[in-house]
Length: 363
Image: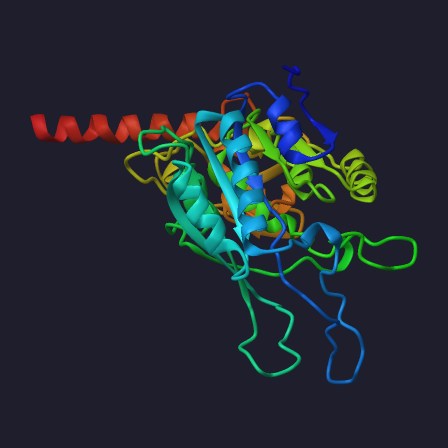
Protein backbone atom coordinates (compact mmCIF):
# COMPACT_ATOMS: atom_id res chain seq x y z
CA UNK A 1 0.00 0.00 0.00
CA UNK A 2 1.45 3.35 -1.05
CA UNK A 3 1.98 6.07 1.58
CA UNK A 4 -0.28 9.09 1.10
CA UNK A 5 1.55 12.00 -0.55
CA UNK A 6 -0.10 15.33 0.20
CA UNK A 7 -0.27 18.28 -2.18
CA UNK A 8 0.71 16.20 -5.17
CA UNK A 9 -0.67 15.00 -8.50
CA UNK A 10 -0.69 11.27 -9.22
CA UNK A 11 -0.39 10.48 -12.91
CA UNK A 12 -2.54 7.54 -13.99
CA UNK A 13 -5.96 5.91 -14.01
CA UNK A 14 -8.00 7.14 -11.03
CA UNK A 15 -9.32 3.65 -10.17
CA UNK A 16 -5.84 2.15 -10.08
CA UNK A 17 -4.35 5.06 -8.11
CA UNK A 18 -7.16 5.18 -5.53
CA UNK A 19 -6.84 1.41 -5.07
CA UNK A 20 -3.19 1.96 -4.12
CA UNK A 21 -3.87 4.69 -1.54
CA UNK A 22 -4.35 3.98 2.20
CA UNK A 23 -7.88 3.10 3.28
CA UNK A 24 -9.91 5.87 4.98
CA UNK A 25 -7.23 8.49 4.39
CA UNK A 26 -9.04 11.51 2.88
CA UNK A 27 -11.58 13.91 4.38
CA UNK A 28 -13.44 14.95 1.25
CA UNK A 29 -13.66 13.91 -2.40
CA UNK A 30 -14.72 16.22 -5.20
CA UNK A 31 -15.34 14.35 -8.44
CA UNK A 32 -15.97 15.87 -11.86
CA UNK A 33 -16.17 12.63 -13.90
CA UNK A 34 -16.70 12.36 -17.66
CA UNK A 35 -20.27 13.34 -18.50
CA UNK A 36 -20.69 10.90 -21.40
CA UNK A 37 -22.14 13.70 -23.51
CA UNK A 38 -22.73 11.41 -26.50
CA UNK A 39 -21.75 14.06 -29.04
CA UNK A 40 -21.66 12.33 -32.44
CA UNK A 41 -20.99 15.30 -34.70
CA UNK A 42 -19.77 18.91 -34.64
CA UNK A 43 -21.92 21.68 -33.20
CA UNK A 44 -22.17 24.97 -35.11
CA UNK A 45 -23.45 28.44 -34.22
CA UNK A 46 -26.04 30.20 -36.42
CA UNK A 47 -23.16 31.98 -38.22
CA UNK A 48 -21.69 28.53 -39.10
CA UNK A 49 -18.67 28.89 -36.77
CA UNK A 50 -17.67 25.77 -34.86
CA UNK A 51 -18.51 25.49 -31.15
CA UNK A 52 -15.58 24.36 -28.98
CA UNK A 53 -17.51 21.43 -27.49
CA UNK A 54 -16.35 18.29 -25.68
CA UNK A 55 -14.99 15.75 -28.16
CA UNK A 56 -12.18 14.40 -25.99
CA UNK A 57 -11.52 10.68 -25.90
CA UNK A 58 -11.93 10.53 -22.12
CA UNK A 59 -15.63 11.43 -22.51
CA UNK A 60 -16.45 8.59 -24.93
CA UNK A 61 -18.05 5.31 -23.78
CA UNK A 62 -19.40 2.45 -25.88
CA UNK A 63 -22.74 2.25 -24.09
CA UNK A 64 -24.62 3.28 -20.97
CA UNK A 65 -23.61 -0.05 -19.46
CA UNK A 66 -19.91 0.64 -19.95
CA UNK A 67 -20.37 4.09 -18.39
CA UNK A 68 -22.26 2.59 -15.44
CA UNK A 69 -19.51 -0.02 -14.93
CA UNK A 70 -16.88 2.73 -14.94
CA UNK A 71 -18.92 4.81 -12.49
CA UNK A 72 -19.36 1.91 -10.10
CA UNK A 73 -15.63 1.12 -10.19
CA UNK A 74 -14.38 4.62 -9.43
CA UNK A 75 -17.05 5.24 -6.76
CA UNK A 76 -16.13 1.95 -5.06
CA UNK A 77 -12.46 2.95 -5.04
CA UNK A 78 -13.38 6.42 -3.76
CA UNK A 79 -15.51 4.99 -0.95
CA UNK A 80 -12.58 2.90 0.26
CA UNK A 81 -10.22 5.87 0.67
CA UNK A 82 -12.84 8.20 2.20
CA UNK A 83 -12.87 8.51 5.98
CA UNK A 84 -16.02 7.33 7.76
CA UNK A 85 -17.00 10.94 8.54
CA UNK A 86 -15.88 12.27 5.15
CA UNK A 87 -18.11 13.49 2.34
CA UNK A 88 -18.27 13.06 -1.42
CA UNK A 89 -19.24 15.69 -3.98
CA UNK A 90 -20.04 14.68 -7.58
CA UNK A 91 -20.96 17.11 -10.34
CA UNK A 92 -22.70 16.29 -13.61
CA UNK A 93 -25.26 17.28 -16.21
CA UNK A 94 -28.50 15.65 -17.32
CA UNK A 95 -26.41 13.30 -19.47
CA UNK A 96 -24.98 11.43 -16.48
CA UNK A 97 -25.95 12.73 -13.05
CA UNK A 98 -29.03 10.53 -12.64
CA UNK A 99 -27.04 7.39 -13.44
CA UNK A 100 -24.28 8.52 -11.06
CA UNK A 101 -26.85 9.29 -8.36
CA UNK A 102 -28.36 5.81 -8.55
CA UNK A 103 -24.91 4.24 -8.25
CA UNK A 104 -24.06 6.48 -5.29
CA UNK A 105 -27.10 5.19 -3.42
CA UNK A 106 -26.52 1.58 -4.47
CA UNK A 107 -23.04 1.72 -2.92
CA UNK A 108 -24.38 2.91 0.44
CA UNK A 109 -23.65 6.64 0.35
CA UNK A 110 -26.21 8.87 2.11
CA UNK A 111 -27.27 11.87 0.01
CA UNK A 112 -27.29 15.10 2.04
CA UNK A 113 -28.20 17.61 -0.68
CA UNK A 114 -28.40 18.06 -4.39
CA UNK A 115 -27.07 21.48 -5.36
CA UNK A 116 -28.11 23.30 -8.50
CA UNK A 117 -25.33 25.37 -10.04
CA UNK A 118 -27.21 28.01 -12.04
CA UNK A 119 -24.81 29.34 -14.64
CA UNK A 120 -25.23 33.10 -14.90
CA UNK A 121 -23.64 33.07 -18.38
CA UNK A 122 -24.50 29.67 -19.95
CA UNK A 123 -23.78 28.66 -23.52
CA UNK A 124 -26.95 29.18 -25.59
CA UNK A 125 -28.71 26.36 -27.42
CA UNK A 126 -27.65 27.27 -30.93
CA UNK A 127 -30.08 25.01 -32.77
CA UNK A 128 -33.06 26.45 -30.91
CA UNK A 129 -34.69 23.03 -30.46
CA UNK A 130 -34.33 22.80 -26.68
CA UNK A 131 -34.20 25.00 -23.61
CA UNK A 132 -30.79 26.50 -22.93
CA UNK A 133 -29.01 24.09 -20.59
CA UNK A 134 -28.20 26.66 -17.88
CA UNK A 135 -27.37 24.48 -14.88
CA UNK A 136 -25.44 21.51 -13.58
CA UNK A 137 -26.23 19.34 -10.57
CA UNK A 138 -23.98 18.48 -7.65
CA UNK A 139 -24.68 15.58 -5.30
CA UNK A 140 -23.29 15.95 -1.78
CA UNK A 141 -23.30 12.80 0.32
CA UNK A 142 -21.93 11.24 3.48
CA UNK A 143 -20.54 7.73 3.73
CA UNK A 144 -23.48 6.61 5.89
CA UNK A 145 -26.57 8.05 7.63
CA UNK A 146 -24.65 7.97 10.94
CA UNK A 147 -21.57 9.87 9.69
CA UNK A 148 -20.56 12.96 11.68
CA UNK A 149 -19.65 14.94 8.59
CA UNK A 150 -18.31 18.49 8.43
CA UNK A 151 -20.69 21.28 7.56
CA UNK A 152 -19.58 24.82 8.42
CA UNK A 153 -23.08 26.20 8.78
CA UNK A 154 -22.10 29.48 10.43
CA UNK A 155 -19.40 30.19 7.83
CA UNK A 156 -21.83 29.63 4.99
CA UNK A 157 -24.40 31.84 6.68
CA UNK A 158 -21.86 34.66 7.07
CA UNK A 159 -20.78 34.08 3.46
CA UNK A 160 -24.41 34.58 2.41
CA UNK A 161 -24.98 37.90 4.25
CA UNK A 162 -26.24 36.22 7.44
CA UNK A 163 -28.88 34.20 5.62
CA UNK A 164 -28.98 30.40 5.57
CA UNK A 165 -27.44 29.30 2.28
CA UNK A 166 -29.79 27.65 -0.19
CA UNK A 167 -29.18 24.75 -2.52
CA UNK A 168 -29.29 26.88 -5.69
CA UNK A 169 -26.02 28.64 -6.41
CA UNK A 170 -25.79 31.41 -9.01
CA UNK A 171 -22.23 31.42 -10.32
CA UNK A 172 -20.67 32.17 -13.73
CA UNK A 173 -18.84 29.58 -15.81
CA UNK A 174 -15.06 29.74 -16.12
CA UNK A 175 -14.07 32.67 -18.33
CA UNK A 176 -11.46 35.40 -18.72
CA UNK A 177 -8.07 35.16 -17.04
CA UNK A 178 -9.14 32.12 -15.03
CA UNK A 179 -9.65 30.04 -18.17
CA UNK A 180 -6.36 28.28 -18.96
CA UNK A 181 -5.29 28.43 -22.61
CA UNK A 182 -2.35 27.02 -24.54
CA UNK A 183 0.14 28.94 -26.67
CA UNK A 184 -2.32 28.89 -29.58
CA UNK A 185 -5.08 30.47 -27.51
CA UNK A 186 -7.12 27.26 -27.27
CA UNK A 187 -8.68 26.02 -24.04
CA UNK A 188 -6.38 23.62 -22.21
CA UNK A 189 -9.43 21.80 -20.79
CA UNK A 190 -12.90 21.89 -22.34
CA UNK A 191 -14.81 21.62 -19.05
CA UNK A 192 -12.66 23.63 -16.58
CA UNK A 193 -14.75 24.51 -13.53
CA UNK A 194 -14.70 28.00 -11.97
CA UNK A 195 -12.80 28.45 -8.73
CA UNK A 196 -15.86 30.12 -7.19
CA UNK A 197 -17.69 26.79 -7.27
CA UNK A 198 -14.92 24.90 -5.48
CA UNK A 199 -14.41 27.80 -3.07
CA UNK A 200 -17.96 27.41 -1.81
CA UNK A 201 -17.74 23.61 -1.64
CA UNK A 202 -14.49 23.53 0.32
CA UNK A 203 -15.54 26.37 2.61
CA UNK A 204 -18.76 24.52 3.41
CA UNK A 205 -17.56 20.98 3.99
CA UNK A 206 -13.90 20.96 5.02
CA UNK A 207 -11.64 22.36 7.73
CA UNK A 208 -8.10 23.77 7.44
CA UNK A 209 -5.52 20.98 6.92
CA UNK A 210 -8.20 18.52 5.72
CA UNK A 211 -7.19 16.30 2.81
CA UNK A 212 -9.24 16.81 -0.37
CA UNK A 213 -9.02 14.23 -3.16
CA UNK A 214 -9.98 14.96 -6.77
CA UNK A 215 -9.84 11.78 -8.90
CA UNK A 216 -10.47 13.74 -12.13
CA UNK A 217 -8.05 16.57 -11.41
CA UNK A 218 -7.92 18.12 -14.87
CA UNK A 219 -6.11 21.46 -14.74
CA UNK A 220 -6.17 21.61 -10.95
CA UNK A 221 -9.07 23.84 -9.90
CA UNK A 222 -9.69 21.78 -6.76
CA UNK A 223 -6.01 21.92 -5.85
CA UNK A 224 -5.80 25.67 -6.47
CA UNK A 225 -8.70 26.44 -4.14
CA UNK A 226 -7.55 23.90 -1.54
CA UNK A 227 -4.13 25.54 -1.44
CA UNK A 228 -5.64 29.01 -1.06
CA UNK A 229 -7.85 27.84 1.82
CA UNK A 230 -5.07 25.94 3.66
CA UNK A 231 -6.40 22.49 2.78
CA UNK A 232 -4.23 19.66 1.43
CA UNK A 233 -5.02 18.29 -2.02
CA UNK A 234 -4.43 15.03 -3.84
CA UNK A 235 -5.03 15.05 -7.57
CA UNK A 236 -5.27 12.12 -9.95
CA UNK A 237 -5.03 12.77 -13.69
CA UNK A 238 -4.04 10.69 -16.72
CA UNK A 239 -3.70 13.40 -19.38
CA UNK A 240 -0.10 14.75 -19.48
CA UNK A 241 -1.16 18.15 -20.85
CA UNK A 242 -3.57 18.68 -17.98
CA UNK A 243 -0.97 17.65 -15.41
CA UNK A 244 1.57 20.08 -16.84
CA UNK A 245 -0.96 22.94 -16.78
CA UNK A 246 -2.09 22.08 -13.24
CA UNK A 247 1.46 22.00 -11.86
CA UNK A 248 2.25 25.38 -13.38
CA UNK A 249 -1.00 26.80 -12.03
CA UNK A 250 -0.47 25.45 -8.50
CA UNK A 251 3.09 26.77 -8.32
CA UNK A 252 1.71 30.32 -8.60
CA UNK A 253 -0.98 29.98 -5.90
CA UNK A 254 -0.49 31.91 -2.67
CA UNK A 255 -1.93 30.39 0.51
CA UNK A 256 -4.27 32.63 2.51
CA UNK A 257 -3.33 33.33 6.14
CA UNK A 258 -4.64 30.49 8.34
CA UNK A 259 -6.59 32.81 10.67
CA UNK A 260 -8.71 33.91 7.70
CA UNK A 261 -9.86 30.43 6.71
CA UNK A 262 -10.50 28.71 10.06
CA UNK A 263 -14.30 28.22 10.40
CA UNK A 264 -14.19 26.68 13.88
CA UNK A 265 -15.33 29.81 15.72
CA UNK A 266 -19.07 29.47 16.27
CA UNK A 267 -21.44 32.38 16.31
CA UNK A 268 -22.54 33.25 19.84
CA UNK A 269 -26.02 32.25 20.93
CA UNK A 270 -26.82 35.93 21.41
CA UNK A 271 -26.14 38.27 18.53
CA UNK A 272 -24.15 41.42 19.31
CA UNK A 273 -23.78 44.34 16.89
CA UNK A 274 -20.26 45.70 16.62
CA UNK A 275 -21.59 49.10 17.63
CA UNK A 276 -22.45 47.69 21.07
CA UNK A 277 -18.72 47.59 21.87
CA UNK A 278 -18.68 51.38 21.43
CA UNK A 279 -21.81 51.85 23.50
CA UNK A 280 -20.25 49.79 26.31
CA UNK A 281 -16.98 51.76 25.92
CA UNK A 282 -14.99 48.60 25.31
CA UNK A 283 -13.90 50.34 22.11
CA UNK A 284 -13.72 54.04 21.25
CA UNK A 285 -13.80 56.05 18.03
CA UNK A 286 -10.27 56.34 16.75
CA UNK A 287 -9.09 52.98 18.11
CA UNK A 288 -6.94 50.99 15.71
CA UNK A 289 -7.67 47.41 14.66
CA UNK A 290 -5.34 45.13 12.68
CA UNK A 291 -5.27 41.65 11.24
CA UNK A 292 -3.26 38.88 12.91
CA UNK A 293 -0.06 39.61 10.97
CA UNK A 294 -0.39 43.36 11.47
CA UNK A 295 -0.15 44.06 7.75
CA UNK A 296 -3.73 45.38 7.51
CA UNK A 297 -4.98 48.15 9.82
CA UNK A 298 -8.20 50.10 10.17
CA UNK A 299 -9.68 52.83 12.37
CA UNK A 300 -12.91 52.51 14.38
CA UNK A 301 -15.53 55.16 13.48
CA UNK A 302 -18.20 56.53 15.82
CA UNK A 303 -21.01 54.73 13.98
CA UNK A 304 -19.34 51.31 14.17
CA UNK A 305 -17.88 51.37 10.67
CA UNK A 306 -14.17 50.82 10.03
CA UNK A 307 -12.11 53.07 7.77
CA UNK A 308 -8.91 52.36 5.89
CA UNK A 309 -7.80 55.05 3.47
CA UNK A 310 -10.73 55.77 1.17
CA UNK A 311 -12.52 52.56 2.19
CA UNK A 312 -15.27 52.68 4.83
CA UNK A 313 -17.46 49.67 5.66
CA UNK A 314 -18.56 47.18 8.33
CA UNK A 315 -16.02 44.95 10.10
CA UNK A 316 -17.00 42.07 7.80
CA UNK A 317 -17.15 43.96 4.51
CA UNK A 318 -13.88 45.82 5.02
CA UNK A 319 -12.03 42.66 6.07
CA UNK A 320 -13.25 40.85 2.96
CA UNK A 321 -12.30 43.72 0.68
CA UNK A 322 -8.82 44.26 2.13
CA UNK A 323 -8.06 40.52 2.24
CA UNK A 324 -9.42 40.02 -1.32
CA UNK A 325 -11.94 37.39 -0.21
CA UNK A 326 -15.58 36.92 -1.28
CA UNK A 327 -16.59 36.98 2.39
CA UNK A 328 -14.91 37.24 5.78
CA UNK A 329 -15.90 37.02 9.46
CA UNK A 330 -14.74 40.34 10.87
CA UNK A 331 -14.96 39.12 14.44
CA UNK A 332 -12.15 36.60 13.84
CA UNK A 333 -10.20 38.77 11.37
CA UNK A 334 -9.60 41.89 13.48
CA UNK A 335 -7.36 42.29 16.54
CA UNK A 336 -6.76 45.11 18.98
CA UNK A 337 -3.34 46.72 19.17
CA UNK A 338 -2.65 44.80 22.42
CA UNK A 339 -3.09 41.51 20.54
CA UNK A 340 -6.56 40.68 21.88
CA UNK A 341 -8.90 39.35 19.20
CA UNK A 342 -12.10 41.21 18.47
CA UNK A 343 -14.01 37.99 19.08
CA UNK A 344 -12.58 37.78 22.62
CA UNK A 345 -13.80 41.33 23.20
CA UNK A 346 -17.23 40.32 21.92
CA UNK A 347 -17.35 37.39 24.37
CA UNK A 348 -16.45 39.79 27.19
CA UNK A 349 -19.28 42.11 26.13
CA UNK A 350 -21.76 39.22 26.03
CA UNK A 351 -20.64 38.10 29.51
CA UNK A 352 -21.15 41.63 30.84
CA UNK A 353 -24.62 41.79 29.30
CA UNK A 354 -25.50 38.41 30.80
CA UNK A 355 -24.26 39.55 34.23
CA UNK A 356 -26.37 42.69 33.92
CA UNK A 357 -29.47 40.62 33.18
CA UNK A 358 -28.85 38.44 36.23
CA UNK A 359 -28.39 41.50 38.48
CA UNK A 360 -31.60 43.02 37.12
CA UNK A 361 -33.51 39.84 37.90
CA UNK A 362 -32.10 39.59 41.43
CA UNK A 363 -33.02 43.15 42.23
